[in-house]
Image 1 (cartoon, helix red, strand yellow):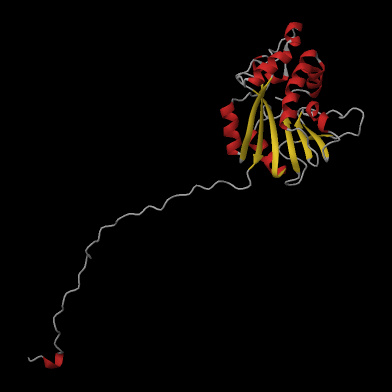
Image 2: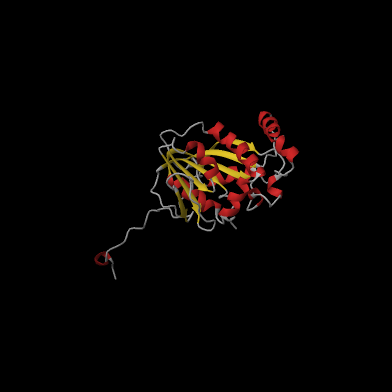
Length: 253
């Protein structure tokens, strides 16, 4: 079940939410330094991470699931958000160059159908950035944050999902190494946790950031021709010389 949009907004306005926002956004910007000349779409509750690209990208859109609700964004600019059915995005085929997914995949009842719809709207060579709770991370174990809701994923599960929906993974990153506690001491050390975890690529981050690109053609398995040696078989019926028939006129009575 999806979280309400007001709960998501309240979380990112809290001290713990701001720490989570900074930690994840730093990894997002490392993967996507800019989106100049691209059509950018945020799916789910991705507006906290679209900010640096709004005004930079050719177009910026934010689609929020109908079961989640929608908010006006940006606050002091014309609205670019819309309430949508995630299995039927109101876009044509191949019109999005960059697609950011946050608080959507783990909430979906049909992850394969959602990824197929993402594949449809992505342009050839387009890229998707999935931000999904890590099932082995500490954040997935506490439901007082949005990362503790829905279905968390393992690295293997994400690879399988991408392969089955015709995506090729480009990179796997992790973020949110700081424990999800509101203690001031932990919050002050958040940057230290992230720096050490990112530098040594430690497992156990709260969030996976997976960048992938769409496959344009389905892989086809090539089979080698198998030669079978069939033994020569003798014919079942062999022709034999027949007896000469006498005509009735030649018979003597």
